[in-house]
Image: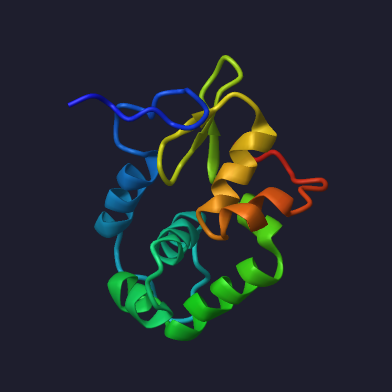
Amino acid sequence: MTQRQSRSGIPPHPRKPPIVGELETLSKLPVRTRGESLSALEHLAVLNGIRYGLTPARIAKQHGFSKTTVQRIKNRIYQNPLSIFELRVISHSGKGMYQCVFCGEAKARLSVAQRHVLAHFFAHHIAQNIDLGDIPEVF
C-alpha cells in the first residue's frame, strides 16, 4: 500500500500527530479540581474533540470537564476563529516547515499552515477566506 500524498505534495508526517502524545500525557495527569482553569493541554483536548465533531457533553465526559466550559470554548472558536492560534496548534519543525499538531501534516509557509488548521474546524472554503490579520506566532 502506498502512502497518500497531501494536496501540497508534502508527504504526511510518518509518526503519530503531536496531539496524540500530548493527549496521552493528559490522561496520566491527576484529576482537576472544580473551578480550576483549563491548561493549554486541556484546551487542545477540547479542540481535538471539536475537530472530530464530538458534542460538548461527550468531550466534557471524556476529559472530566464541565459541559458549560466545553461549550464556552466552542462558542469562542466560532465567534473568533483566530483564537485557536493562542494555543500551540502549529509546531515549527525546522527548515521553514510548520506542522499541524492535530494531524501532523507539514506546510512550507506559516499562512498555509494556519489555513490548514482552520480547515479542521471550518469548511475548506470558509477557512480559506478567514482574514488572518495579525496572528501571534506561538510555537
